[in-house]
Length: 207
Length: 247
Image (cartoon, rainbow over the protein chains, first blue to last red):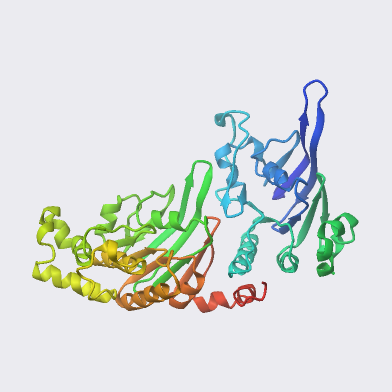
């Protein structure tokens, strides 16, 4: 049996401040496995850890504990210049990557893929003034059809954001204070009072 | 086979992937549009196709010949011309002089012949013909700096046409233009497209939908959609957003 597309294994990232009495300022924990190509919607308030999660999954940020396995390869053990062959992070319209270079590249292994397996879209601009939304959603579906895993991070502020998440996503992750909640549908997620609180008036669009 | 084909083009600058696995084909005598939001990689794609940047991976084939990695002047000589997003005219020269300077026979003689550029009968006629084709008949003796912004854009296209290209690349021909001047450029392109392969980069979707035979949508350095304007506009979300249904 082949390795799952993504296995986030006991992942922890902790930020601490202070030298003598260090205090944890932020902590995110994640532990989940995605076996097959899927389109996953990621939501959560600002500062909840969405982007940190994406950085950990693309290997640009080093975890405090745990590991991220992309198709069987530990992404943090892969040469920095080849990590985007496993997982690529798109920040709005262009890609950003600043790597924590903890060890020299010659000590790291080569990526076993030639084309990104996991695509993470961080708050793509869904602009109502042009027709790009349609093209973008079809592109997400095309990637999935090509056996890729797609994450779309979106902070819903309009009814059509809920509609497009419903339209294209098959699974959802809600990030809240560094904790992940997984669900197969938005209505399931909407049973969570924290998610209701996050969506505010938009919660009526989910039902 | 298409006149120009790009196969699996990759380009990165440092840690940043700018083009990821781009495959394109431009059929002869067709008008091809490339559109995408700002920062999508359109101009880099153009620069790779016209030889300004060498792709890290992939092949570019023009009329059956691999031209990847050739320097821009050699690519130009094969019949690939481009206009720039930033204008590229000699301001102190007249419209007809700008065109004449770009004619291959004048280029071959070198810049020293500049003084009798417009008096030479044959090249003068040829340049005047190009000016007429781009709607600038009557402006022959006007210096480029005294032309309107829209006329300067047209003249830029004329300069590219002077090289008698087989394929013409236009980088945002309507950038900075108002509705009226955009209309004139659309007319100009409709006029010159008949016996020419044209590739236009544009973020004005309506402009491209009205002109192009085929449109390629680039985003995140990748081809995210491709098809005729009609097929692209069939998408439910495209319909809703362009009709203002989401506003």
